[in-house]
Length: 127
Image (cartoon, rainbow, N blue to C red):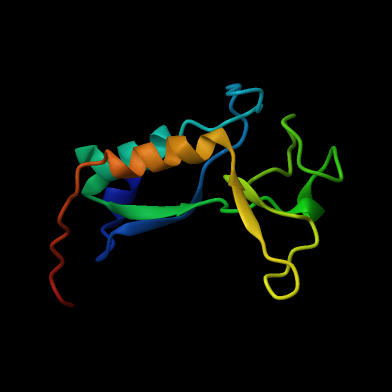
């Protein structure tokens, strides 16, 4: 963050995406479940809150087309499994076939990080 501060941008930074899925954390048989500690520290630690206004987790739902090791969602780790859950059945479109969101255990980690984070106030001077 020191390098970012040195540049002296007029506005705070927002992470476009965060949430690396390389964790070695298995919950209820689901491999590579993210802790989302970053969701908490980027919104609470002074060094971060002075310069960062949050970010967007990558990504909400697993896309079957992006899976690398399987043609269906499984509990095994997969380099293409980015979502915090998935929609089912596979052929759902919310018109003819209703979609149901099924969260992975890491969804609860993200929810906990967001709901236990102390709210901050950002004061910005107009430019």
